[in-house]
Amino acid sequence: MLHTVRSFRGMVVSPHHLASQTGLDVLKDGGDAIEAAVAVAACLAVVYPHMTGIGGDGFWLIAEPDGRTHTIDASGRSASHANLGLYENLAEIPRRGPLAANTMAGAVSGWAAALEASPRRLLSPSRLLRDAIQYAEHGVALTRDGAEVAANKSPELKNLPGAYASIFERAGRPMVEGERFRQPALAASLRRLASEGLGTFYNGPLATMIASDLEALGSPLTAADFAEHLADRPEPLSVDISGARLFNTAPPTQGLASLLILALFDRIPADKPESFAHLHGLVEATKQAFLVRDTHVGDPAWMKLDPQALLDDSDALDKMAARIESHRALPWPRSPSAGDTTWFGVIDNEGRTVSAIQSTYFEFGSGLVLPRSGIVWQNRGSSFRLSRGGWNALEPRRKPFHTLTPGLARFRDGRVMTYGTMGGEGQPQTQGAIFSRYARFGMPLQQAITAPRWLLGRAWGDASTSLKLEDRFDPALYEALRKAGHEVELVGPFTSQMGHAGAIVRHPDGLLEGACDPRSDGCVAAW
Image (tube, rainbow, N blue to C red; front, side):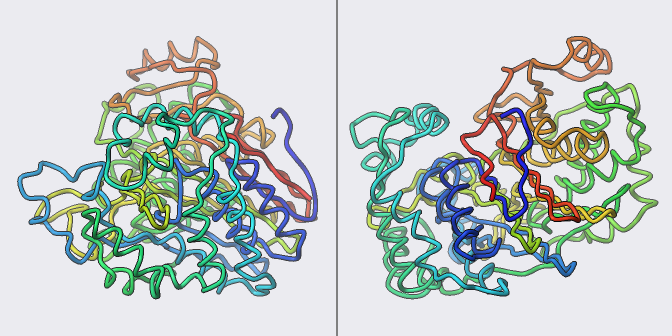
């Protein structure tokens, strides 16, 4: 994909082409951006099960045409029985298996909350979930990305309790690219959500069945945890930079880090993209932002830092930016955060804009696949610390730290931009790369996404915390970064380590511009 896609009536971008087309069809049927985004979310839960699903969490940013911007926090809390005693004699929470499935899945509650916020709500849940149900029942061609992840993760997943092997390795081996992939049990679950209402995921026969399967497999979650779950509607975080106001999601997400990176970089001299000043400045801004994130961000009920107060404090931001040395790298690493996900964006013909993200955390989450519902359950709670206090410590009914972070910007000239990516540690870094290229340096949107990227910290299944750069930059840049003290590591020219990004911009005259990551299996669908 070499060129920015343009249209006027509506646009969808996601990391899978079928999901993008599903969203566009909803817009054509009269749905708004919110309804289209719910359809995309449901479709991604089927066609991209290694990255997302209804057994995971989600976060939404919605920009209304009247200037309002609001958010939905559809993340789940730890089980009421998830305490230190449950993990006695363990140094950390397991990444896979029943004890990793220790937090409620909030994604479906996010769909319901989003639809409640839709001003029109013309389409029924049956219509919005139609494509997802059909793809789960009749099958889709497995993508290259899905096949690679399934093969790489098979040794640690195929022998777990539950239905992983019977669904994802039906032929006795990991599925291969292009193979027809069916999920009949998941299709039945989605059909029940469509006919009985999205709330049945948490209260009703479907919730009872899901909770029973989780308990039988050894998860600490109970039916009471399902009944107590609700999506939240916190105020979005925001910060002013040159020419725009940026928005992101509040804790427990790392939205604060995303905003700090761009607010600090706004204070750093840099004349052109892909220069030393550009990359060094963003990488060093990332380090400053991660120091704040890793010290303070978690369940907001347990935080001492007011993130919006920090973003509003120009003097504090000036002091943080002043710590960045123009030609010397701050020694690194800090503890990295893993995780993978799916971001998607929609803008309709009224200008309503959605930036949304949902995830099961690691690829295939906990690896616990529920036999009767076909749901892959997340392992977001494996990020809790087994500690009696402090940052992100395990407690019953507590929200874990989230890497999920959808981005949105309102420009002073009237443009609105939705943007984001998957990629754990890399999400705020990729947001910084894309936004700075487009907004500060004037790159065309597709070029801003296609251009080579970087990642400070850990990638998929990798313990390395070096500064990884795709090998399409000017070789002189690598040497300049090394001389400044960065631990530079070159990776392939287009690697999923750098995320699956996307963006849509709406101009004041209604022109839509969209771009999708060639590193993904997605596309821009436009009308």
